[in-house]
Figure 1: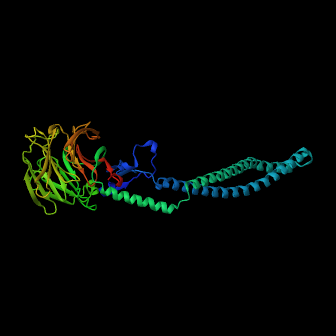
Figure 2: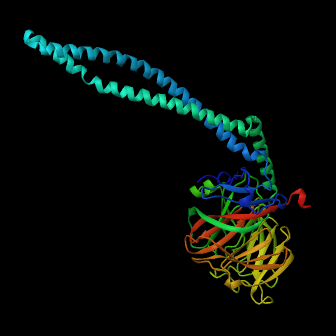
Figure 3: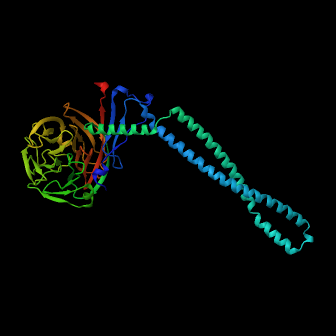
Length: 458
């Protein structure tokens, strides 16, 4: 498998063809509507853009196709012309032979009528020569048929060329190079637009892509969403308890092949599988406590630790699969988060935004969803998405927006291929969900919905 930077690089597939007003309800002033996605089944990122109004570029693709078709027709016409000349030459030669054969045949019949006057030997030789020439007769007939067919082809090509030329004139004699540059310019603008797109609403989850099969049933693997494009390090933490070893790989490819670049021996054992790497540091829940640890990989030491006040721990409020998954640390486009439950909130999920340096809680939201009824959860753009199970048939069932402090019940299914999920985290850089699925490290593609306001909307 290639490095994540290759299979998650942005691939822009924009709808450049014009919209048919009779088939859409989008008006020019409603703005761009964008569906963006981390990757397709082949591993590519997708952004599908529906433009707010029609423009000249809506005919560019059709015009290029027409030009290419016309060139192919012209090339075909030239090839047929060459074939026709060669066939006509051969045809004239065979016609000449046909005349000779007919004369020979007539002469042979005359001689045969008077064969009694000929010597038997001479008659037999002449008959053998005639027999050798007889197979040429069907060849001659085939040449006649081919010559007629080529003439017919030539006429059809001329007619088609005339029709295509007429169509081209109706479309307009555009400067194709200029149109090509305009399309490239539009694609560049759309790419710049996508770079500004950071948040959207979850619409669909597809996959998974199985990256590797390793470890126990429970564990975590992750990359840093704030790392540069050239930094594709992977961190691997097997098991949900009684372990302090973090394995590092320089790339997805090294991770798949098992080529470790470094091993870290943490000062404390971790609890659960809900760790996160964010801006070069590992955030994890210290075993048998509600203490959060910030560990710097570059410095190899703890930078901060803080107790998450009132948070349940050690299987008091875990996810449905248990495994000391009481405190779930995660990151999205907005920042660092902790998801947990408290007695004060009756065991329901609490969302807290954390300061990445001090681990101090900056703000919290209390939801009404029981933590013990949640299979897993992840944050995208400040919205918490909760699954209803960790087993087969799991789906995203509940979401809570920290922006509006409102919730809704959802129905977004996903394929739990290996039947047991013990880790599910969103990576904002890759626009993908990293999951540990029963000893398999997998990736899910997410599709987000965006609305870009145009100047007319202000």
